[in-house]
Image (cartoon, rainbow, N blue to C red; front, side):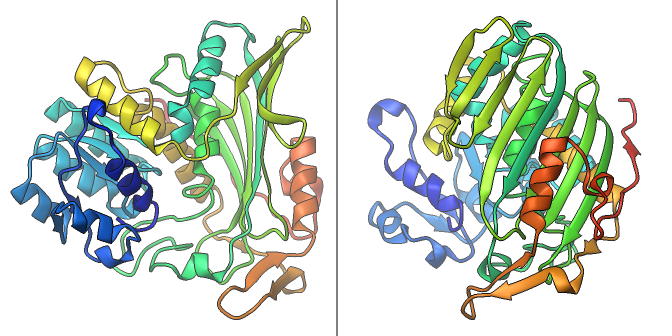
Length: 387
């Protein structure tokens, strides 16, 4: 009910009768962290200390999981085994084996499992994907995305797993910009190239450079190059250790045109075809909790495929996991680059000059080591096995 879960609590409390949905119960071991707790209690909605306790007393049609990523797999499987549909927040899981376990449990239960990558539920992205599937832009060539979102020390102190490879119980987390705050945008590059509306393109080769400035276990900066089964080449750049915020900046290049988003020139998803045509797809929402709930419940009622399910989300997971293997020993930025400033409790750590370097990598479609920055070192190419 806390953290991102508050968005779902708010959406569920604001449900109208004609929505056909009803908020019947919640689970949280520490519900006091939810700012809307008084409203939930005023509605006399029961709150349980765990998912297991809720399932023992309640029989919901749909379970919504806004929980730490390291428990996604076990909680999705538990909900399915009790006969419930599931909407699980991103990221889908922490390794490919967990995703396969979830797929097998879903198939046994014959239920819906949706994953909450909000862009995949937005009309703007779905219209764009329909045009790409129809061949309007031709074959994909190069896709690149830049997301520079600085985070302060509160971000890494908010729980026992932020920025870590494993939590305090030893469970795999692999928390990073790639597998948390910026994962939407990596997922989107695979999703829009998928051969079907509910599938994503698949990574074939992954090469990554992973760095950190913050005093964390995992990385706060990543540059990943990926070659997909479709032949498209992807460049994904994400960092929590830059001085300024920038992005997402997106450019998808195709044989017959390109699609861009971000900055003053492209405040919405804009397609520009080589014949001079311009297609305005609109701006994907930053948060689409209401839309996700609506789409998932409609799919359940009508027996339709869910646009962003486990298979569609698996490509981001596969790419993230391969990136971690590409550079298992995270490279720390040189101490003379690292700056920490601000008041205690809100201090921000960043790498001096990193903003400019990552922007140059984005513009040139190159990894930092290929740009010959003195702090950069290459990772090893990971080849994804044939399914």
